[in-house]
Image (cartoon, rainbow, N blue to C red; front, side):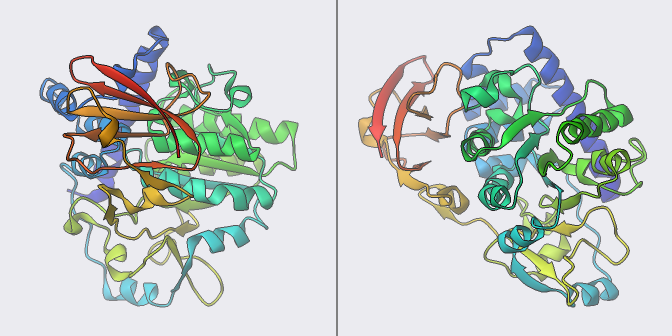
Length: 400
């Protein structure tokens, strides 16, 4: 199967799923925690009852409970392999040298007005990386943060200071919640820009909504976090003609700096990974740069976006991805304090937030008392909620 056809087809299914989820959520404003954060067996049971085998939904739900390996696994079901690189493509790539992605983008932020960065919706890693950019971008004058997932109905987000169930769909994943929470804490004005239509019109509406920020504040510097192909600046998308990033350029006359971090990220199996990732050897998020200072964006002549981020392979510490223990987070073990029956889902909430609606800072499943999986928390006070399968629950206050 052609990879680009597969990607477009899967993306259309994904957009339909999101649309249905948003509509369903609008009809049920008070969503329950156990409708969102499910035990693995329930996620798989729901999958078995789904006649279209919607593996993407399972990948999202595994990411919501911190199971990164299963999120990768289910997102990759049916994924075709990339084409082999030609000798010319390999030679071209080898003319670029690696630099740290954070430093490259910190410097680039000085000269750009709009930066758009994408994600794979099942990959919290991408939210952690965008989170790592926030302080540097703020110091470079960026004051607005727009996220595709955010709902226009949450009018109190900036005043409240943290996301809740009604803030958006993907923000229910803890690392997306932390991304939004961090942006608010640093001082960004966080805004929703989603459109009400689908297909081509959706891309135009998204761009128009972002452009309204510039109508009110023409000097505004804006960071936009999007999913997948909304980042593209070219005209190669048959359904959309142009994606949001390209439309934004048309409407505002500002050429956004577009950062793809989705395509060069690990997959569940090495044979499914982009061949450029196999050519690189990176230990941190990396951008490859040529002698003119331009970042690697793909094969010669590929102009869909400005640069690609190469993410290193994940290692695991205390049962968690190593990137969970960045940004000042340390391992916290809760096993010895659990009194309800295993297996359990463990939710960590910042002290002072409404745990009936707030997005947790972290979520893990512990299968037994011997399960050594750790929460990843910064220093502070937390309310820990522990739930078992039979409705048993326990609340513990901790100060880390």
